[in-house]
Image 1 (cartoon, rainbow, N blue to C red):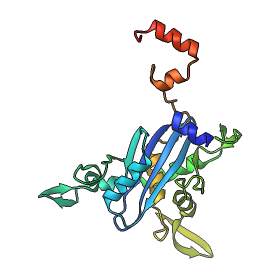
Image 2 (image 1 turned 90 degrees about the vertical axis):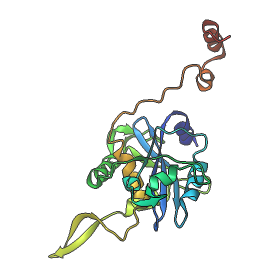
Image 3 (image 1 turned 135 degrees about the vertical axis):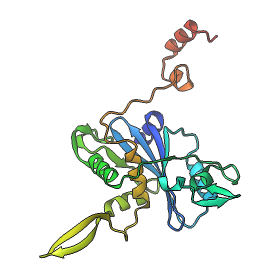
Length: 239
């Protein structure tokens, strides 16, 4: 709970979507907090229309503001016909014609090799990075808050898919396996793609800027002592 509260109060929040027509639609919530990137919420739903995805994702996002909303660039392709014109899946998420809150996305980078490498870089142990829970140095920069009975919206598919990814086996030569650079097709990768899109938009930056609390906002006054609040009010144009 302590880390989740810190995420809500201090982190820059992001949502990332991988839409599936015949496969599950996955949406992930990530936090950029100081030196860390933390996946803290997961939506994973097969066989559901876009209006339902919109309602469900909106319900999980109540009260939050996002620094970015990214999605698979494929959903921005004008591949469908609607009312005599071209239409995209991204437009279906944002249109007001459906009985569901609209969701607007921006295309993410889908560079397979670069994003795969960035995940590996963020998972690499770095002696200068402290663990967000234990505080011990010698830790990675990418974390996931697991799904539990107490926190049912935590990450499950994102962890299992990340752990199971492997390259496609081409052949064996003298007992040695030879792999291609392509991912194995039989392994689920819907939330893994969500993770790739997120890290693609963040690289491997070491230091993340702290979110500034707007001056004279409720949260800003709440952090001040009562005496300091009175001094600020007296010196300002707020009476």
